[in-house]
Amino acid sequence: MERLRWREMRSQSKSNDRTFVIQLLIIAVLIGILYAPVFPTLWEDWNQDPNYGHGVFVPFLTAFLVWWKRDTIQEIKPEPYGPGLFVVLLGIILCLIGMAGNERFTMRASMIVVIFGVFMSLLGMRGAKVLSFPVFYLLLMIPLPYIIYYAVASPMKLFATKWAVFFVDLLRISVHNEGNIIYLSNTTLEVADACSGLRSLMSLFTFGLVFAYTAQRTFLCRSVLVTAIIPIAIISNIIRIIITAMLAYYKGPETAHGFLHDTSGMVVYTVATVLIFGVNEILRKLNRQPPKKVQTPQSI
Image (cartoon, rainbow, N blue to C red; front, top):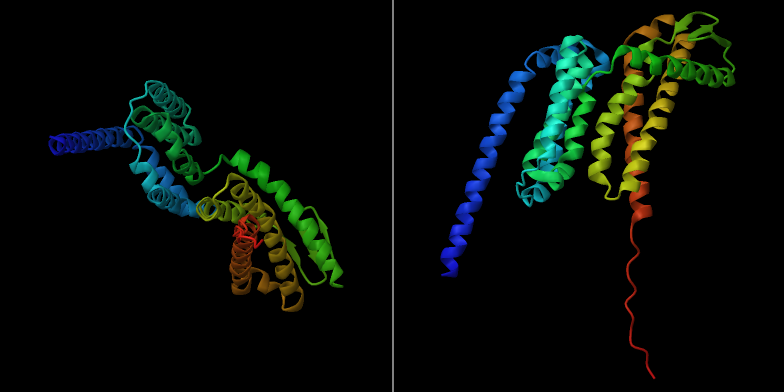
């Protein structure tokens, strides 16, 4: 009798899972139809704008995050949750507003809201909470409006120029700057927006966020590791400008725009990645629990 009941429960569970998958596929198709105009322009930005070349990796990294949490996800039982429909409706309204104003960022961001609302509607709050990080991680694939990008890149560019000139001057090289222009005795260098450090910061942040989430177990350690990415990226960019200035001074102005310039960028990016791994190891050692002492019976 118990065996028969177990078979019925198992059959019902499989039926529920099948129903959930069918619902998810239908909703995925509907979302694909609604956002059909968004995907081509998003792909175009990833391929043509070097500031967002990392965006193409975000969906794959999101899939990895879902796979990484697969054991927890498998324990979730579908629980229809009405308020999730309001989140879906909010996302659709944002999408329509974006389409009406031809505002790409709003249209693209609304897709993440809709996806989160769908999971909330089908899986309940517990399921939505488990999938919240992978879902909202998708925001990193969306290019920022350029009014925001330049508002951040400009002060970063001036900051990097100022400190690079300071350290180059310590090396007894004749140098000064006016804004983002660096004047050497034999040439002039411009620290463009591409050299502000924001591009490398966004790229490091995109990959570092996944690394922090999977490598660390506590919210505090994850937050510290992610926060460390910001100064690491900024300092690495300053070092790159210093190297470029030194190459231009000692080897000639042409080295500031050729193979050596590109190579120095890759080397500095690699060093930044190594530093992030180093911070992770330090956090792991600090967070390591000391072994419990085994109490031995004392002799009387």
